[in-house]
Image (cartoon, rainbow, N blue to C red; front, top):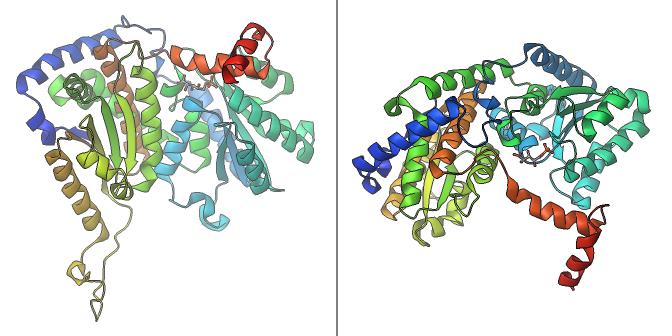
Length: 448
Ligand code: PA5
């Protein structure tokens, strides 16, 4: 059993010779990644991460996770973008749908909340209220150590922590994941004596889920990070060594580029499990930030079904024909719920008596795939045997490798993000940050 990719339902939209041609481009793209000859080749550390990671740090991550589990009712994960989405995606994928709401005895691990991923004072205020007087710890995550959103949230919660425990004790509850040597956060951590974990130089934010960035919060949730790495290592073997015909990451990269060249410039990731919503968010960042540049790229969108069939389903079936869809199919749910017969069939559902709920869910999925295909929306599928750490590791790595291959086929540098700087410059000018004075007056004039 393994995570697998299947594009058989999309074959009506694609000719064999197109696949043949694109497989050559995918091979070239893969070679460029492996030989490190592609653009952004100083950010390829993620390729070997599952087999070549710092074992001493890995052990320290587990130890820190144990301490947090013992001394904290709440863990605050402060970070944004690649310093946030992977951990959340993994924890929601692996844990109970109502993780934070479970009684403490049932969960046995801290509640986990995320902040520093927005600038909303309402959000932060409500979160402060939720933490209240309870014991808590902070995992502050920022590779650069200078990102405004997490830095602001950290200031607020550091103050709360220091008020509650005093500076010295508070320092023992702050864990910083950042660059090994540079950046404001690293300097602050060294100054204050916080435990630090490293985001390797050659691993960009959106490729960092298998570093301490993802691993510490994931471990705190009680998940098995050894299995996560083992799954990633297993996918890595296939990504690196399998020929195109047996290589899911290369096939996915190739097919989406074929579809893009046919005018399908939006890809929708669809899942029939609500706990995969943040896999969609993580995937959107991975592909959107890696490929959306130089006026190119596929716009990544995501839906959770069947909920969104009652909203976005209309557009997907019948709106502008610009999209293709990739279904994330979890083959085995964690439990069976059988629909029972009722003596009087008032709701008309007795025809489902004796059927398992997952059969209903899968029937909705299969019916939707065919309907969307008939509506000119090519459908691709990743199948995930079940929601555990090993398969999640496979999925993360397969997506990352596919993203590297796909970005190279597209002809962009998948590992930079020049476009995210523009809003920052304007925001800094409007906030009066020293050095931005010249822009401030200009922008204020434009906002009048
Ligand atoms: O993928 C990326 O590089 C970005 O999304 C970053 O992860 C995000 O901007 C956060 O950056 P940092 O970790 O430096 O605070």
